[in-house]
Length: 362
Image (cartoon, rainbow, N blue to C red; front, side, top):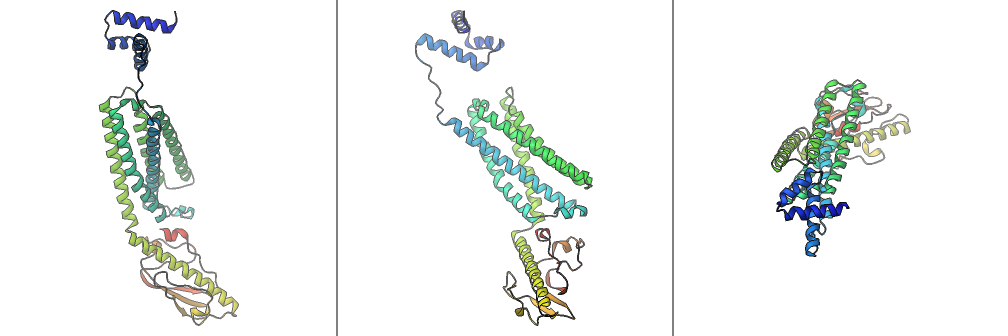
């Protein structure tokens, strides 16, 4: 007797004996059948008895819709978690500065912080919104939690999270082996551990079949509240270090002023070499246009003795290196300035010091 005939005979005799359907399903699950397979066999039996096919549940477009939502969830998850990690790393580099590694460009960068803040502010609320929609649908239809699309995309997200965790940890360890401060390594490792373990705990735990609805709701609510608190704290800390957009605009303007002064000093050197070691009497004699980016006025030029001269400008804020009381690197006449009017003493016979990029991105 084939397996189909055996299960059909078992169903028929069980129903004739008056065994309730839940007890019948329990008997089959005790022998290794899943609950879904047991009910499917029962549906086949009734279909044969009535001669009418059991109508399937309408689910037109459900798979594509689920895939869209889960892809949106995991894409926004990756954006805000990676951006949150970059923001935290930038703040760690700021708070636990290591002067030996400044040559690697590890100064506090406003570009990194602004991009990270913008990504977190946009991606995190979208992630919460889409997750709420998916969880509501799952509460109305628990079978959606067993969706193959959900499981595949969840495991893919966990693989990506594991790869990011290993990559960040390897990078932090590499810097430690190069002699970086242990405190920086520990702080970065802690950040990577918290973010990765949070993702693993929430999504890997959500794949468990035996989890009750109450436990699932409790975990969802805890994860939403905990992540929102962490994100809010990091956003506040980021803005505290970054300042208002108006402050950033001043910083960018000062950076462009220094760049214009640097190019003007190069033009001064070329004029000195081309005119038998003579300085121009005014900036208008130097080829090119070098203007303040805000006022569009010519920079103040004051000739001094021999090959020396001064270039003056009015700055909106102190340069970052002076603000942090950090000594300049290289030439003592590096482009460090206070707020307000400041003059740089330069020498046309010497090659001017090129401003550092990180000097402006502070």
